[in-house]
Length: 223
Length: 295
Image 1 (cartoon, helix red, strand yellow):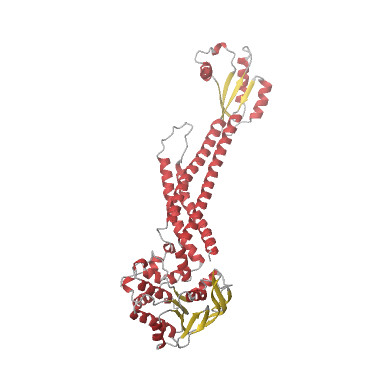
Image 2 (cartoon, rainbow over the protein chains, first blue to last red):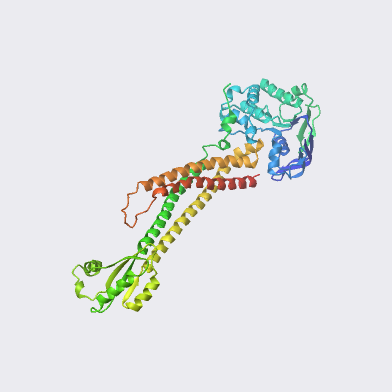
């Protein structure tokens, strides 16, 4: 599904990732950990083409990201649900409109029932008509997750999806991602939340990866 | 849960670009100003065309024959000339100017007390053309043979520069319309560039959810085109109102015909849709170029 081969990336000459190999296969579940600034967000961005690697190869759904046309890249992103750390929204649209944006942007009819159900699942049914700037950090994260999964993507890449929500809500969000994973969606979650990882392990067969010293390593069972 | 219908409310892709965007207001103002000026340029063009036609028609329907001869022969030559004119095809009527009329013609230069009767003034004969016109060259040949003192003036030398001036004025007016259209396209292209730069977050989010460049461009094109259309409509209405409120000129004054007459009032209504087309093309080209550059 997503394959990184010997990928390196840097910011302004400062090496961030070196020789990264990764293969996200259908139905896989990964946790990605590492200290702040280690390159977790960068790795996720490389996976969906927001950043272009300095060297190495990245294949997404069998296509080389580097040689992809802009339209092909857009089509590829429709198959990947992304939850940004800073939860980017269109602030002049309501929360429901933001969650439904992937359908609008791809010219498909919005399934109103699914939208309603999803907003209820993430506990935002009362905020459907609210504008993003009026939402709390946790509400924004839940909305970002809802937007990422509404198109039933083949892969979900989540950057700290539970960073601003309480334990109960983080469990609900995790349950949603686990449910999607059971239906065949590959999931990769970048997180600092070790409790979340421990809880997930009781529900799903997850693999732990850690970025340290600019390289991607298997974290094994030491979490 | 509050009832929501994101599909219905987002059906217009233009809503994806914030309405409060100052560049959209810039497009509206630019379009309004250009359309207002275009109404004036259009009016000038139509008016100059009317003037050219009027000057041409007025001077083309008449000619003057000046007959100089010794006093003893003037009567006979006048009769001979009138005979020639009466048998010339294309001449509807002829009339010998009376002494009083000649005095009035000379009054601006010599005053009211000029003793016209005592002067050896040439005899003036006014010729009124028939609609099909007459052969001026042929008539001159006949006159030179039978009345050597007769000089025919068919006003060609007066008419041609006036018609040429009016034609030049009309060309200048159309050039102004085209320059205004080009200026508007340039301004709206700049506004589109600013709008895309100011809405980088919108573009980032749309790309994140898999929107193609064509969709993103359409969102901006819709927003700016609608704004330009609104501005053009307002500018056109203001311009037309300006002409409607102009004082009505007399039937024969120099400025008669300045503005719009009859069906001419429909012409400015072409400006808003034209501005919309210009805005659409300019914004689309700018948007796709910027999106390609920033991908």
